[in-house]
Length: 74
Image (cartoon, rainbow, N blue to C red):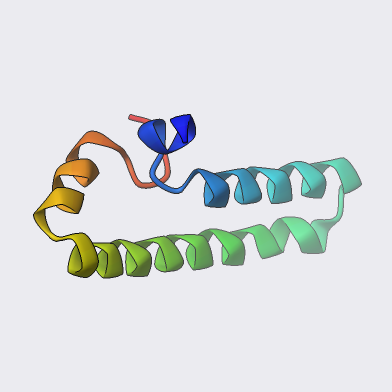
């Protein structure tokens, strides 16, 4: 619960950093190229989920958005 107070989508950020770490660990070029696709997909999924959460929670979630960054720490 604490990570959600710092980063809105902590699980997604963890998954991405794990993907990048394993890519470098294995030194696979295809995996590193695929990382660009993963970045775009993560951003689109997070953006879509933000819109759904605004519909569900309204002003309360918009206030939360102003306090907590979506993926990257400020």
